[in-house]
Image 1 (cartoon, rainbow, N blue to C red):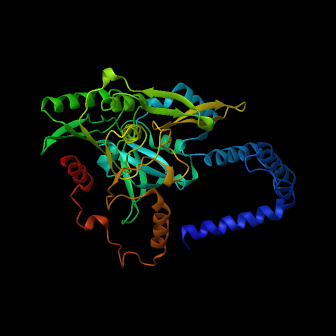
Image 2 (tube, rainbow, N blue to C red; image 1 turned 60 degrees about the vertical axis):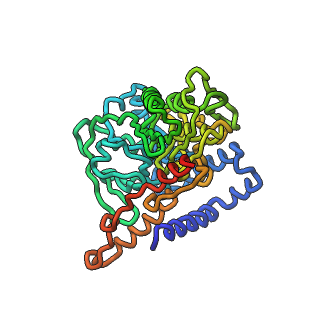
Image 3 (cartoon, rainbow, N blue to C red; image 1 turned 120 degrees about the vertical axis):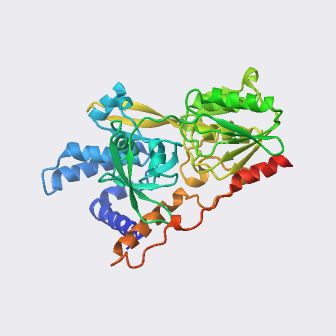
Length: 421
């Protein structure tokens, strides 16, 4: 049976069971609004009472509480997490900074760990991990059973140590990729001049200091009398909000560049262009793809909303949020999303659904090899079907690597075409 079929059966069974056990109680609150906190608390209290009075064994209420808290927070967004007392201490002491990662940006899609982008030259890139990969297991731990925070912790480790990742990839069989953790350097921005005096700036990250490197590249292009620029933000997911604003300011002289939105869509912070930092007035096109997220979306969103240039490519991933740690009396903690990054028009990049997330390009150009987050469940179903084959070696599934790869960059080609007019 497919993953989706199993999910539907489990869901229906759970609804029937809950109604059978708690039907009378739930009917008392049938007229209560879904977001009535008081009504929801009373339901939790009733469930806890049933567990305490009728469960077959003496329940471990502390363990049950931890499971309930994890489930509660998991229903919010990928970046909110329930932390154990030890995780709270490590978080506050920034102990995780002593560990190294693999150079990839992650999120959670359909409860599985999802690779948004991979840093060029980093351990993940050298091992063959790609944007769009679904990580089913970290060692023997199923990612659907843990939070994004827990997954990131499992992937980080001592310099030189290895971590085994079971990866699902569109068009290929499941594979285990061993990645050696280690330090890496993010490449600095690069530039070149194409035919027709069109400058191309490739950005790899928007971490601290990157805006200065991008400024240098713009200055170099201006010295070559370049009056049209393509800013390539594909794969740019990691980064700092201030660096993103500084980068957008290079191309936008005045007005709002970005916002931070809190509860009830209230603006917590507004970032405005500084005319003294503005550098380039010529024609502009920006490339984005599914690997563009967070800081990359801030730049693209500013240029799109201010009508500064065309945004070419695919809808970006949709990220950019700020978390705050709330400690509990038990020593546990809640790492909750308290604000979202948004475009000048107030559109948050982190949406509740794919259709409302990220930045939608003004000129859409999709790449055939780009896997959508919506395809994650299909990947799981395909994997389950392969596992059921009595002799999978008899009729091997064609590997994606066996087919010729498309070498033409359709998105870059379109951007060059737009600026050549």
